[in-house]
Image (cartoon, rainbow, N blue to C red; front, side):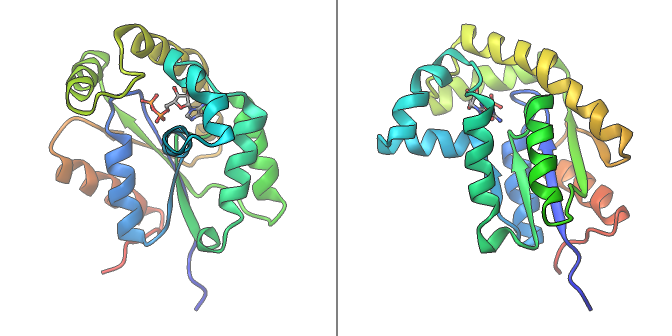
Length: 199
Ligand code: ADP
């Protein structure tokens, strides 16, 4: 039996809980999470050349240039542990990045299997972000940077959902509820696509 692949993307507005749910789902499927935000933050923390290049961009809530971001993702997805699947969080974030990812995956005849869209009303995500700002002290969780990131989400990231919807791979998940409820909703949607978690 060939193992089914699980090449997934989780997408949703800032504060939708996609980071938390992404980790849960990836663990259940035994695939790595590839979070561009986490990769950038780790590099900033370690003071690498990449980190120095992107610090001001992240603090302002702007996007890191597409070429640079796509190169980092291609490197990460080329590692052995991503061969039978991965869960992308935060990438692709605009239609140019969708093209970059498509081109990369097509080289091995692969494509995304499912896109999990976490649906959360704007007031709810704003409230969660304010809470996170207090709890985690992320330097890009200032009111100004948050508003800017939400604008980028609406203008640049939301359009990628229709691109994937045309391919029939989007599962829209209600992101309001308890953590366990939301994880169960996502698992059910993936199971319906034949992507089942290990038991
Ligand atoms: P959030 O979803 O709350 O904005 P992320 O951790 O996904 O948090 O991203 C934090 C920051 O990292 C973004 O504001 C942006 O500066 C940078 N970043 C993350 N992913 C990308 C991407 N795909 N393209 C460009 N920049 C990105």
